[in-house]
Image (cartoon, rainbow over all chains, first blue to last red; front, side):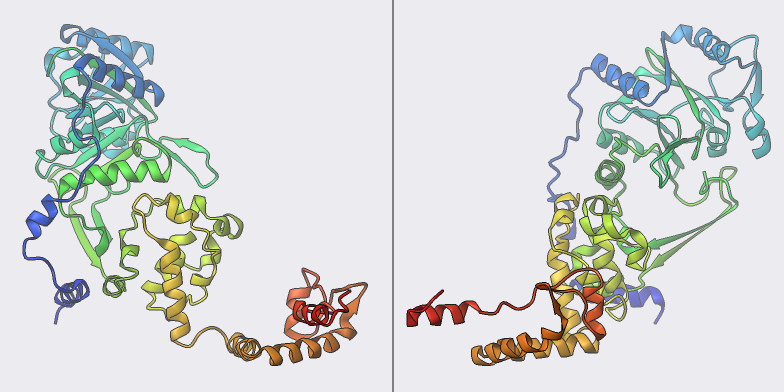
Length: 214
Length: 245
């Protein structure tokens, strides 16, 4: 008997007689938590902004046409001359006058030496201030947004959902893509309860919240 | 970062961690950060489905681990131990844990959940004292986001320890002797009289500060009151006779 068979047999022996209709048992699990958001779009975006500010992210708001100019502003304020760009980041939104590096070919050590990275995102969740990356070509592979110390992320207002369940249900359509959820710049508390930044990803997160859609 | 950058990723998964559907993450990703660190969401979550060419590990192995979990599952009274999401809320609430710290539990799982999980994962062969290291105050049950009835399971495990040999030999002898003494009121009164006589050499200024042998461990930290000269029953009998003091 293989270990797999042995474990499965012990599970069914441990659980004893099971009801015949597992699917309907699952469907009848009470889910009394808030699934659907109740805010109007403006309030939802305000909530998302509030959370980002709370996490210490810098947020810029602009229209779709102003994205390139806003990127210029954000990079200038951070004194950055060069930035890595996700391979399929929309060309029309790229700023002029900066050295734009190809994020697809950079090695880990080049990512580590870089000034930062510019990407879009897949969706965002307002109530937790979460940005979700599905690591498509617009967002780049995982290393691109984990290793650099600065992340400038463009989020469109229509990508923002309100609740975590709405976010998870949207993510369930992303197939087998790897996913990263970011709730504020990377931080963790060590055993002494000291908050340490930059443990899992960039220490600095700037967000450009653009009206309209991708 | 540590799961996304290396070329080889081996993930060890306890079988109780498997949830039915992707959508069920909406439950756990709301419960866990709120109960663990009081955050709305963990700052970073990484989710992956196998390998992705050109992104992250090139080789990925999952080891599904039973290691005593099906044994826990088979016990209906303590099965809910497996519902634990490892948030640590019970640790923060536990007055015993706050005094002893994690190392006292002798396992990676400490605090109230460790006191019920560790003995069960070790098939009650080791850590037999852990179910007793609790005042059963119930603070852990109140804090638990998945409502594991830890005090009830502690009592269940205490019964199992007793049914399978009980504590150390000295403790078992002491418990047997106590049961013998408390069984019969005349016997108890005779023992009280004997104890009043036996304690005389150790009594000083109305308290006992130093006892010999195993009992020295107790008096090293606290004084004992001597047994009163008159028990309540003796006082009652004298009162009935009409000469109560």
